[in-house]
Length: 109
Image 1 (cartoon, rainbow, N blue to C red):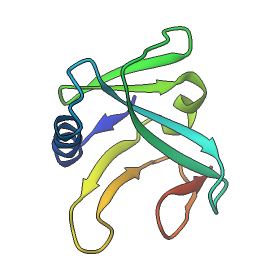
Image 2 (cartoon, rainbow, N blue to C red):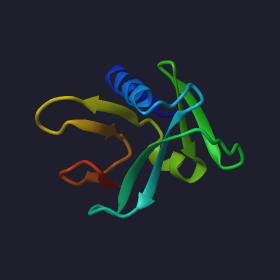
Image 3 (spheres, rainbow, N blue to C red):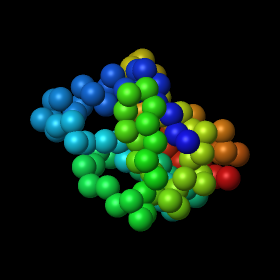
Image 4 (cartoon, rainbow, N blue to C red):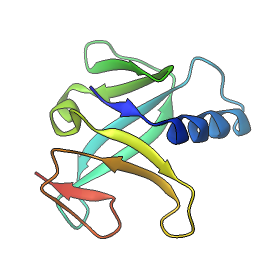
């Protein structure tokens, strides 16, 4: 399961509204090879679901979709958003990560 914080939910809704994306859009989270720690997070908005390849989670009133390969890396992760001066943006609080890079965009297990 992956969760989304209140602040991340608010930011997602704001972005979807500003981009004119309707209620059929959801948050897609994935893990790809790359980054300075070996694995990198990928976050995007999508409206196409492939039930043979995707797992769907509902949290805090939002639909979060993760491809089946990435679920193992993201289990228990919370998607958060920080609006502060230092490090504004989405961040992943991943209990599975044994090491992260200083920017927080890549990790290793």
